[in-house]
Image (cartoon, rainbow, N blue to C red; front, side):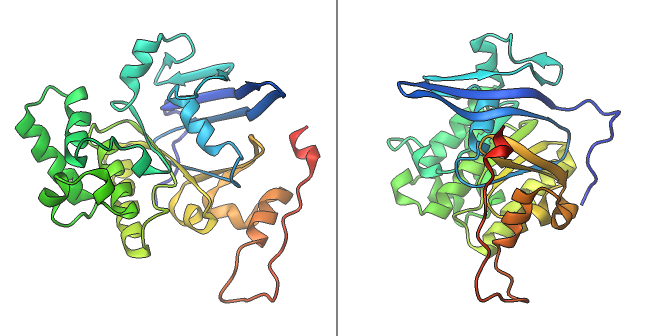
Length: 285
């Protein structure tokens, strides 16, 4: 596994004091609270419980926070470009071509009235001047790359005709076909069996190492993040509790991280009762 970027390399993405707020009739819901990090050509894992702000962080980067949400930050920079002052049209051009996101529920992200092949080809043609034939060939190649058998047959299927795991791989192919600099993967292997999961992770790993892509890997699986990522951000209640090297996850010091690790079952050292996670309101102060 490659080491994270050296300080001399310019980060692909820099976030400083990112906040995501939702204004509701009962008050402000703070989904992300002052998150700061930089992303180099590496695998950055973000872990935490459901509702900790992991997905909201990815959507905020892509300007996909729906109304009544608002995104605030002291600094949000992609390769020297200020995302905070960039107009909507320019931000839209970045999506897909330079920064892509694989959503957590892929089948709900696909258009039900178009075949999956048409949607992958469209993602390629939007960002590249290509003929329909070239887009189709490129799409079939990407379907093969994500370990889909009979890609020509699957190309003609509609979203409701594919399984959850296949739909997830279709979404990964669609997001990777434009060859982005940054991929935000929100639980990209949650619907896949172990064998295919390893194959998809190898595809993502090859893109980081061969193309110098930055990967933000959002997951609940601490074991997976530990073995796959370079660095890990542990989030709770929209706030980063701890940031550390993935290989040092077992030596984490924050009680929340220790609590998450303690809740994991261990087949080599089975416990009669798994630990219960205790949360301290002071962590969000």
